[in-house]
Length: 332
Image (cartoon, rainbow, N blue to C red):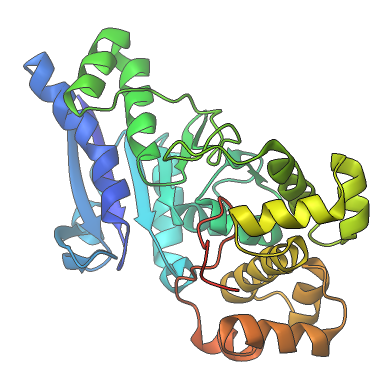
């Protein structure tokens, strides 16, 4: 039997966590035997509230620390740094030293990285936390894949990708037949391999195709967040006039290219402000705003508070991520 422990933290992502567990439940049912067993734990035990308001009853870590686990996976969401503790890190290292596979869902990657358990490994997390992980843990190769299985470390961006990761583990242990049956049972109609990008460029989730030239322009913008490229130079590289690009951007995202470019750099800045302790002057430079007073002014204009205040008070979800263009119409 494959035994695994899911450790959840306050305001964990319930959808991603259950998406990971449910394929194992289906595999047990379909095979007619208990091939997988799991428990839910938290630091203190008892009820833990998820980010959607759902409460999950858990056992305490103390009651589970002496058990033998094949996999221990941590699931957290906002402010993972608030859960760092020597006791937790030592316990994770102890399980690792015993040969246990360690995993993370969503920002659980921060917990493993902070404990030094991802050094020299490939790992992932939700796309809006990628920049912070890159800044904080240069010894970890951070990629924007749906999930990563690197020997005995597994990490997942969250959401429905957790189902893909679970199905891959079932496939590795019991073959394609059981994995296919479990996928069909939970209505997961297409298995996505680990190398799948979190935000594929081919098509939007609801099927609306973005003009190729707009995607190319955005890709160039995202590659030049620190060393800013001018809009005329960008237009030259994608082979379109500035007037045409402006028309397409206003049609698709309801913003000019310049404003869109400024906003995705501010989005990156807010991620670094709220998810790292990087000096605010360095945050500005890393986001293409070397003039600190200008940076603070437009940051406040966009988010309603200064970077310094945001760092102290704003370690909460932010809803201004520019890709894949989900704030259409919110800003003029």
